[in-house]
Length: 207
Image 1: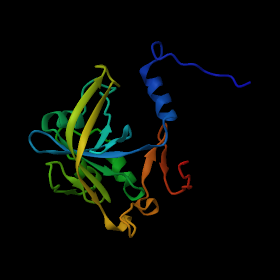
Image 2 (image 1 turned 180 degrees about the horizontal axis):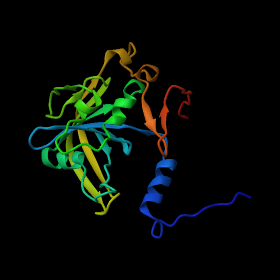
Image 3 (image 1 turned 135 degrees about the vertical axis):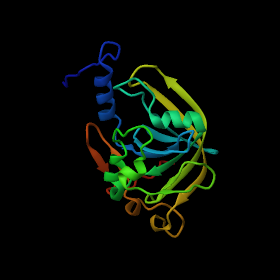
Image 4 (image 1 turned 90 degrees about the horizontal axis):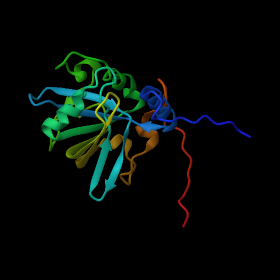
């Protein structure tokens, strides 16, 4: 018979809970979130707590945490609170190192675009920039923010309505579908592990 470890979040460090959760909920897609502050300065940051919420109308969500070091809101959350807009770009194998570079602790006002070597490109309906090198960009308008705590590590769920979907034709097939082998998306596992998405297998839904 298998033995089992049971964790009580009420009596366990939130850091340990975070580590186990990020090792359990895998693989996680990565949202590369572009925002601007009230002065128009750009910010770019990756988040792996990220998912689809609705298709009709299209809504998407991601969840930045309060800083584990300071307990303060990160730039992305503050910027969206101020402007109500953001762009989500896809992380791919070709962009993985530059996406990871966007997670660096930079001085206030410094641009992750410049630091990572990614290129800002004007969007159609929102002020934050598209990521030119990413084959997929979603322009989003804030719908709501829900807070789940006020200490370091507490999540804030950000839900946005998708206003525009930009798809590079090089990742599409003749029917307009995204080809996963062309997109080569990457995701997060636990610890410092990332994952590729090249290996797939068909599993038709039962009737």
